[in-house]
Length: 207
Image (cartoon, rainbow, N blue to C red; front, side, top):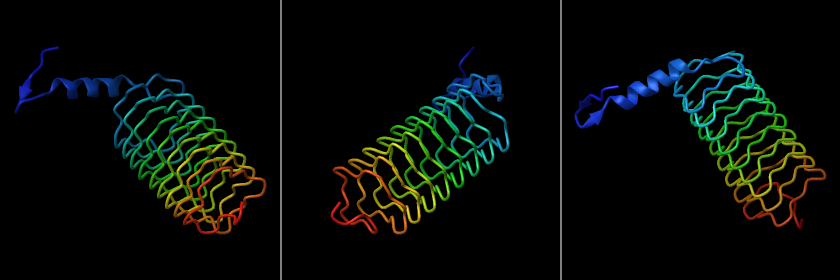
């Protein structure tokens, strides 16, 4: 393809991205690696087991989308809306959800190691049995969410809100709770070995 230059920039990259998006068949099990889908309306779509690894989904509307078992590893979902999306057993490793909305999302047994949920809205989200070790929840609003029996070791919860959350039997070893609110949270049988409770509201005293 011939590259056309304009104001010192090339149009080729934009054309290739457009072709990539068109080639991506948004169907269950499709290969959409590296797809450019920023701002796309994908509400209520059936996308189970789709491969969206490293895709650009920033600002996309994924409300009520079926993403069960989907591969979103390394995807950019900043500012995306995933309200009530189904992410059960999805691969969310190293995905970026900064400023995204995941209210009432179903992420049971999802894999979200090292994912970025900073300033994400996770109200009433279900991450039960999920593996989110080393994930960043700084500034997140996770009120009434469930992380029951989740693996959360080495997560950052700095300045986050987990009020009335279900953290029963969660593994929260070496978690940074500085500035976190967990008032009213259920923490029965959760583990907090070497956790930082400085500045935390509602954290167990003398743990």
